[in-house]
Image 1: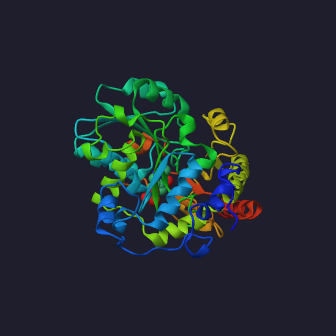
Image 2: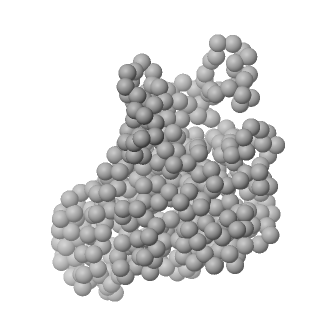
Image 3: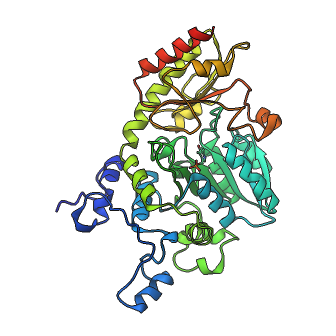
Length: 418
Ligand SMILES: *Cc1c(COP(=O)(O)O)cnc(C)c1O
């Protein structure tokens, strides 16, 4: 049997061979699907040791199973991190971080430019007694100014949905380090290939695996990654049972026990398998969507019917220089644009023949959605204005089609309605 050397290869190559490194049953080169709910050991003493965390193993699949663990190993490898816990969805992962690690009376500093459902989740946290301050996270000074003695955590997104603001990621990392705060970054829209959490000082990174990492729009999942940078011995909210063993594992252990064992936000083995197969082509797909998105953004910006294009790869973007400095190899798949006043946004979307009008991000197919009327509808006009979301804003998730075909479709739709 050949075994690839553990360190010599790139992350992409190692990801493709990760299952073999873990030792796959029967010589299979894919991790098989384990659908067993429960696990049995040679002796009752072994079961006790596994339950008490003294011996590796599984007890009940709500807390994980071997197929899910194989995916976790791949995400850890992509982030060059210490460990990963996966969840049923990105929202389950984010919820697990907040509910496992925050308590009533704590204060959270949160970016104002936020994924809609995370924004809604903040109201739940506030109702439970966690104070939340929303700040413009494109300047680290705003985060610093919001910190109080009760602040425990800072939460930001790498590229914000849907207007593509790029947070002052490394500046905020330095602020959190100085203040001893846990820095949590939602890296969904950059993936670990464009920017790794550890490189900007994040203690935890969350990902919606439903997006680029899975990549095919056929499975949901989420991940919480511990970069190893945060010193958990300084964190006030670690409960006594999780202060066993090495301190670098405490935080993720508590997130796993609360989020999976107690709250049950468990990723199914079938979905873990699909996400892991999807992740094998992440580097290929991401290169392609970044190229497509930049070409499309540059083309849209030239069209007389288009008033504004938001894409970090454009020189006109307010954080373009930061994005070019922080992101390795591209600017992602998310962009948004506004048509000139008087053009009917919904009629334009109906005129598209190839691009699919749909929510979701990071399918292989290009998707478009009018955001103010749909995914950002519930938050109301005031909060939308704070986030820079115009009523005419169209969000695009750029896919891997041939870019000439995409430009052709937008071109015919613009001609059709004007
Ligand atoms: C989609 C998304 C989420 C939520 O992930 P789900 O897997 O859909 O629950 C969280 N954050 C960002 C930035 C997202 O794009």
